[in-house]
Image 1: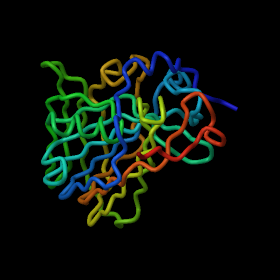
Image 2: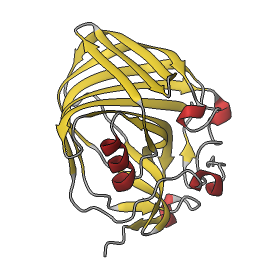
Image 3: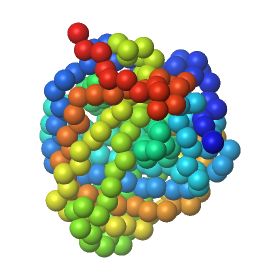
Image 4: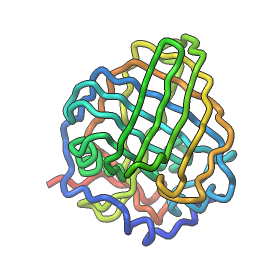
Amino acid sequence: MLVGTASVEALAASAPTISAWREQAVELRGVTCLQVTAEMRRAAREAVLPPALHPTIPAAISIQAWRVRDGDLGAFDFVCCRVSCRSGVRARGFTTGACASTERASSGLAGIFGFPTRTATIDFRQGYDGADLRVEVKGKTILALGATSPEPMGPDDVQYTSTLNLAHTPNGLRLVQVEAHHLASKIDRLTAHLDSFDGEAFGDARLRPYHVVSASIASEDISLPGVRFVCRPDELAFTGTEPVSRA
């Protein structure tokens, strides 16, 4: 059985801190959500995941971008890179890196849900014929991609897997389970191309996506309920999962 081989101590060094668990959901309204999934080189398959998680075959990366027009964290753009994995038998995405366009969103997503978020310049454009995404940090492009040829899909035709973020929490160092509820009114399938991706900037230089498998763009609202469960990063989900400790 394959499991992650990343050092928990090394991952913990850059993990954000959740000082208290929020019970109320975070509501994001008027969201454009772009998701691009690509196969990645096998060198990173187990190496970037903590021992609690199982890598998928083939190894894959999911890049998700949100343009949020209104909500509890204000208006902002957000991009995260997640490595495809399983926690127990459930499909998940382990976040290796994330960026937000405002400090309010960056600190909120880190402090509430454990996203390893930093502030960046995000240029996310959608047109009638597709979308373009570019992320820059201190003037350096760390991600550039484009997607064209939209084809309509049903609102329920795309499934978004739950996210796992490593964070220091009131329970200790834990994998935080984020269950985003995507309430889509319109979804299109796209044909995407990845022009630039800086693996090191998104958590590990061994992250090397090379073949885009699928892409979609949705008009939706997103509800992020309060975290309910966490998992020990060095123990499999069957025994390492626990409810959050609320004061």
